[in-house]
Length: 204
Image: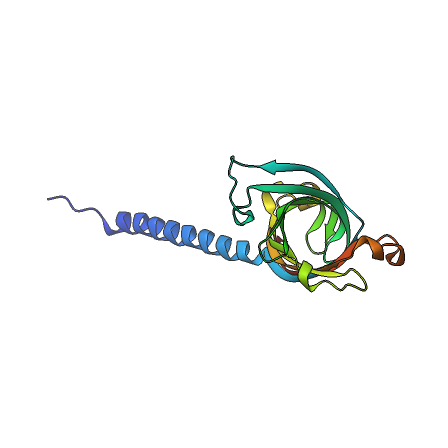
């Protein structure tokens, strides 16, 4: 019977033990460092916009049913200028339709162009606006003002420039007022203004 000397067994066992410890130490700091490299912060951003324009009608199917099924929508395009949590210009292209309750519904894609998000960087980034409406029945006959609302969500995969690879996500709400054309002279060209609120997560 042969016996392996104890002095030969210990170094091999020690090497395996040290390798296991080293692998564990590499994995754990990596995970915690990744978490430490992201930061979520609140965003408050005011904006103003001039009149947009309707740019075509989109319909689906040949249905003659009620407006409830949104068989046709009008495309509305324009620009808004942001300050605060988003600093830049937003270009929007929204599908709009008249809801049964009298409100004007809308949703669609927007692009923040050459926009600075403090703590993230500067570049372009897309977003999707959903659950939008202009509450026409609650409009003020004297000023033509009507309240509006929508949710927004950033699309990190569309980011360019200094925002590319840094924006992890972001979402929130938009509360705003849209004004009738009769109010435009007194508003020095403003067609609407509002405030985006929410949170943005970025890599540091």
